[in-house]
Image 1 (cartoon, rainbow, N blue to C red):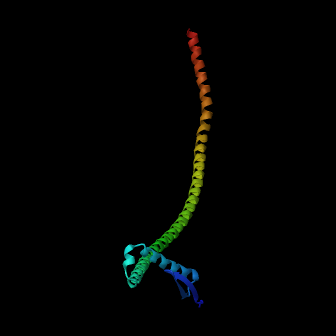
Image 2 (cartoon, helix red, strand yellow):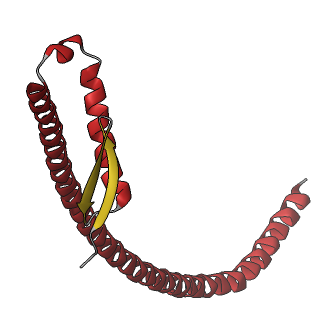
Image 3 (tube, rainbow, N blue to C red):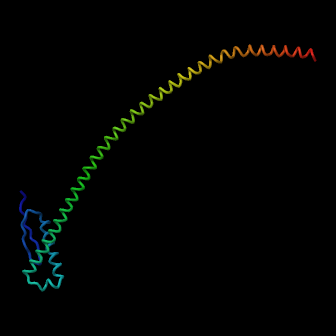
Length: 171
Protein backbone atom coordinates (compact mmCIF):
# COMPACT_ATOMS: atom_id res chain seq x y z
CA UNK A 1 0.00 0.00 0.00
CA UNK A 2 1.27 3.46 -0.87
CA UNK A 3 2.17 5.89 1.89
CA UNK A 4 -0.14 8.75 2.76
CA UNK A 5 0.96 12.13 1.50
CA UNK A 6 0.47 15.28 3.55
CA UNK A 7 0.41 18.36 1.38
CA UNK A 8 -0.15 21.98 2.31
CA UNK A 9 -2.39 23.85 -0.12
CA UNK A 10 -3.89 27.32 -0.20
CA UNK A 11 -7.63 27.55 -0.79
CA UNK A 12 -9.28 30.98 -0.86
CA UNK A 13 -6.26 32.49 0.88
CA UNK A 14 -6.18 29.98 3.75
CA UNK A 15 -3.57 27.24 4.22
CA UNK A 16 -4.90 23.69 4.55
CA UNK A 17 -3.07 20.42 5.02
CA UNK A 18 -4.50 17.71 2.77
CA UNK A 19 -3.73 14.06 3.38
CA UNK A 20 -4.24 11.31 0.85
CA UNK A 21 -2.69 8.48 -1.10
CA UNK A 22 -2.62 10.61 -4.23
CA UNK A 23 0.49 12.47 -5.31
CA UNK A 24 1.26 16.00 -4.11
CA UNK A 25 0.78 17.24 -7.69
CA UNK A 26 -2.72 15.79 -7.77
CA UNK A 27 -3.68 17.39 -4.43
CA UNK A 28 -2.35 20.76 -5.68
CA UNK A 29 -4.50 20.38 -8.84
CA UNK A 30 -7.58 19.81 -6.66
CA UNK A 31 -6.81 22.95 -4.66
CA UNK A 32 -6.24 24.93 -7.88
CA UNK A 33 -9.60 23.75 -9.25
CA UNK A 34 -11.41 24.92 -6.10
CA UNK A 35 -9.57 28.27 -6.18
CA UNK A 36 -10.57 28.74 -9.84
CA UNK A 37 -14.23 28.06 -8.99
CA UNK A 38 -14.11 30.53 -6.08
CA UNK A 39 -12.50 33.12 -8.38
CA UNK A 40 -15.33 32.64 -10.93
CA UNK A 41 -17.94 33.34 -8.26
CA UNK A 42 -16.09 36.32 -6.81
CA UNK A 43 -16.31 38.00 -10.22
CA UNK A 44 -20.11 37.98 -9.91
CA UNK A 45 -21.69 40.83 -7.97
CA UNK A 46 -24.49 38.59 -6.66
CA UNK A 47 -21.98 36.22 -5.05
CA UNK A 48 -20.66 38.98 -2.82
CA UNK A 49 -24.16 39.62 -1.43
CA UNK A 50 -24.82 35.97 -0.54
CA UNK A 51 -24.08 34.85 3.04
CA UNK A 52 -20.91 32.72 3.42
CA UNK A 53 -22.73 29.46 4.25
CA UNK A 54 -24.75 29.84 1.03
CA UNK A 55 -21.54 30.62 -0.87
CA UNK A 56 -20.14 27.27 0.28
CA UNK A 57 -23.34 25.52 -0.77
CA UNK A 58 -23.32 27.27 -4.17
CA UNK A 59 -19.67 26.31 -4.63
CA UNK A 60 -20.44 22.69 -3.69
CA UNK A 61 -23.41 22.62 -6.10
CA UNK A 62 -21.27 23.92 -8.97
CA UNK A 63 -18.49 21.46 -8.23
CA UNK A 64 -21.07 18.62 -8.11
CA UNK A 65 -22.52 19.88 -11.42
CA UNK A 66 -19.05 19.80 -13.01
CA UNK A 67 -18.53 16.31 -11.60
CA UNK A 68 -21.77 14.90 -13.05
CA UNK A 69 -21.19 16.57 -16.41
CA UNK A 70 -17.70 15.08 -16.52
CA UNK A 71 -19.08 11.70 -15.42
CA UNK A 72 -21.72 11.80 -18.20
CA UNK A 73 -19.06 12.74 -20.71
CA UNK A 74 -16.89 9.82 -19.55
CA UNK A 75 -19.86 7.44 -19.88
CA UNK A 76 -20.57 8.74 -23.39
CA UNK A 77 -16.92 8.35 -24.34
CA UNK A 78 -16.90 4.82 -22.91
CA UNK A 79 -19.98 3.97 -24.99
CA UNK A 80 -18.30 5.46 -28.07
CA UNK A 81 -15.22 3.42 -27.24
CA UNK A 82 -17.32 0.24 -27.02
CA UNK A 83 -18.86 1.02 -30.42
CA UNK A 84 -15.41 1.65 -31.89
CA UNK A 85 -14.11 -1.56 -30.32
CA UNK A 86 -16.99 -3.50 -31.90
CA UNK A 87 -16.28 -1.84 -35.26
CA UNK A 88 -12.59 -2.72 -34.97
CA UNK A 89 -13.51 -6.29 -34.02
CA UNK A 90 -15.84 -6.56 -37.03
CA UNK A 91 -13.24 -5.00 -39.34
CA UNK A 92 -10.57 -7.41 -38.11
CA UNK A 93 -12.86 -10.35 -38.81
CA UNK A 94 -13.68 -8.91 -42.23
CA UNK A 95 -9.97 -8.45 -42.91
CA UNK A 96 -9.22 -12.04 -41.91
CA UNK A 97 -12.11 -13.26 -44.06
CA UNK A 98 -10.84 -11.22 -47.01
CA UNK A 99 -7.31 -12.55 -46.51
CA UNK A 100 -8.60 -16.13 -46.47
CA UNK A 101 -10.66 -15.44 -49.61
CA UNK A 102 -7.65 -13.78 -51.26
CA UNK A 103 -5.44 -16.79 -50.47
CA UNK A 104 -8.12 -19.11 -51.82
CA UNK A 105 -8.46 -16.96 -54.96
CA UNK A 106 -4.69 -16.94 -55.42
CA UNK A 107 -4.62 -20.74 -55.11
CA UNK A 108 -7.48 -21.03 -57.61
CA UNK A 109 -5.69 -18.63 -59.93
CA UNK A 110 -2.52 -20.74 -59.82
CA UNK A 111 -4.53 -23.88 -60.51
CA UNK A 112 -6.35 -22.20 -63.40
CA UNK A 113 -3.07 -20.87 -64.82
CA UNK A 114 -1.59 -24.37 -64.60
CA UNK A 115 -4.66 -25.84 -66.28
CA UNK A 116 -4.55 -23.11 -68.94
CA UNK A 117 -0.88 -23.84 -69.60
CA UNK A 118 -1.64 -27.55 -69.96
CA UNK A 119 -4.53 -26.79 -72.31
CA UNK A 120 -2.33 -24.50 -74.42
CA UNK A 121 0.33 -27.22 -74.65
CA UNK A 122 -2.33 -29.75 -75.59
CA UNK A 123 -3.73 -27.32 -78.18
CA UNK A 124 -0.26 -26.82 -79.64
CA UNK A 125 0.26 -30.59 -79.84
CA UNK A 126 -3.13 -31.11 -81.46
CA UNK A 127 -2.48 -28.31 -83.96
CA UNK A 128 0.89 -29.83 -84.81
CA UNK A 129 -0.70 -33.27 -85.19
CA UNK A 130 -3.44 -31.82 -87.39
CA UNK A 131 -0.92 -29.89 -89.45
CA UNK A 132 1.20 -33.01 -89.90
CA UNK A 133 -1.87 -34.98 -90.89
CA UNK A 134 -3.01 -32.33 -93.38
CA UNK A 135 0.47 -31.77 -94.81
CA UNK A 136 0.91 -35.49 -95.14
CA UNK A 137 -2.28 -35.71 -97.26
CA UNK A 138 -1.29 -32.64 -99.26
CA UNK A 139 2.16 -34.13 -99.93
CA UNK A 140 0.54 -37.39 -101.05
CA UNK A 141 -1.84 -35.48 -103.30
CA UNK A 142 0.88 -33.24 -104.71
CA UNK A 143 3.29 -36.09 -105.55
CA UNK A 144 0.93 -37.92 -107.91
CA UNK A 145 -0.05 -34.64 -109.57
CA UNK A 146 3.58 -33.75 -110.21
CA UNK A 147 4.22 -37.07 -111.92
CA UNK A 148 1.07 -36.81 -114.02
CA UNK A 149 1.48 -33.19 -115.08
CA UNK A 150 4.81 -33.56 -116.85
CA UNK A 151 3.41 -36.49 -118.84
CA UNK A 152 0.36 -34.50 -119.75
CA UNK A 153 2.53 -31.63 -120.86
CA UNK A 154 4.53 -33.95 -123.08
CA UNK A 155 1.45 -35.33 -124.64
CA UNK A 156 0.00 -31.87 -125.06
CA UNK A 157 3.12 -30.63 -126.83
CA UNK A 158 3.15 -33.53 -129.18
CA UNK A 159 -0.46 -33.02 -130.04
CA UNK A 160 0.16 -29.33 -130.70
CA UNK A 161 3.08 -30.17 -132.91
CA UNK A 162 1.02 -32.71 -134.77
CA UNK A 163 -1.68 -30.15 -135.29
CA UNK A 164 0.79 -27.54 -136.50
CA UNK A 165 2.29 -29.82 -139.11
CA UNK A 166 -0.90 -30.66 -140.83
CA UNK A 167 -1.98 -27.06 -140.83
CA UNK A 168 1.39 -26.08 -142.22
CA UNK A 169 0.93 -28.45 -145.18
CA UNK A 170 -2.36 -26.93 -146.09
CA UNK A 171 -1.05 -23.44 -146.09
